[in-house]
Length: 241
Image (cartoon, rainbow, N blue to C red):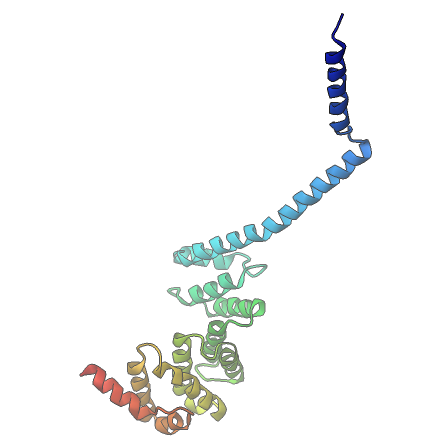
């Protein structure tokens, strides 16, 4: 005869295990679980998709950066304007100008697409200022001045290279540039005296301005700063000594 004590313990253990065991899911709960998993997967895909797109855009831009002239020409021949990222468009505009036969039309089209997608691109606005002047046979027209002003607005002091380019552009086209833009170029160029090895560049701009009758020192002195042009010249002389 079986030990009733052990039997009762086995029954109790089985009963407790049955009580702890989860109930089989009903068809309704299985369906709900399926929808939850689908939702989780969809959210995951939605989070990953922008990252995949970003990586693809960066790869596309890097490929253009190292592309040879034939590849650049091939890229220009494709439909690049639809959905292209601003970095790619800016680089494509630049590479269009570096071809053995510069493609000014494509450079302008890509630049305009770039600033449409991201109006904060000061370098692209400056390139458009130059491209507009080329379309006008080297003259600075209203469109060029508008692009130059936009470059000054979005990137007043963000790049030494860009400040220097705009300063040179204004001095080279002095008679076509309104006085407020001239003064603004001098104000922004004042930063070049405080950062970077720009003394030689500023001295060169001063000489060129004097050669063309531009009152460089008068405009420089009007900038609200404790240091004047002659301080640059003296400092430049000491650095060479």
